Length: 312
Image (cartoon, rainbow, N blue to C red):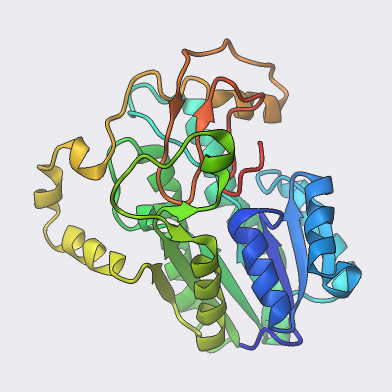
């Protein structure tokens, strides 16, 4: 499917990967609808893209189904039917299962898995009726093979991968396509601005531009799944073939040594979004988390962060 002449909606579109996806889509001749939680940053991004000639924005939390549906309807009213949906918004979570609060697990599942499901369910009927459309789910290599300390996050991406694979089979012959883009650690610049540099020497981070280019290619070529970088596919094959080998490896091999207090602050954002008040502050320190994600820290007003650096 060509980007030129299409209407493309990008969630998490005000910063990081989402913003670069929008930039590349506009450069290819698409009009973009950007969704994120913070209106001023969305407006600034749209202005940089060319203003109303480039598209429109709508404010919503993707975990709030009613708000997301309203935002999508607003964009459809302004731009017309959506041809390409890019589910990019997401949250990170890190820490050992024994100490990760249930609220943190629920929070990342709501954003990373249910958010894309809500958007797809709302827009897919129109795509099927027009026999035109393409859905891109930005998943993660963590949705293909898990690492210690990332159980909550990996579960959301495994769920998104499974949902996408089943949906892709259902869409056969309908004129609507679906792609998965699975990046590893992505350099969004957030670590630098918050003074929390990416701690792993390997694997190296890839640029947001490289991930965005993979999204462009997946749509244009009708690719079902794209790994960024491509060699990650081989690691997934190894894990599927001989899972027992990876199970014997110590956590340090994965570049993660989970600590019990790592995610005590992570639950704050979930509580605030639900309006249930602020839980007690956790221990000091910060946690570096992998993939395209960002960190939690006790110096943050809200301690659940999107991969593009926007506070939850």
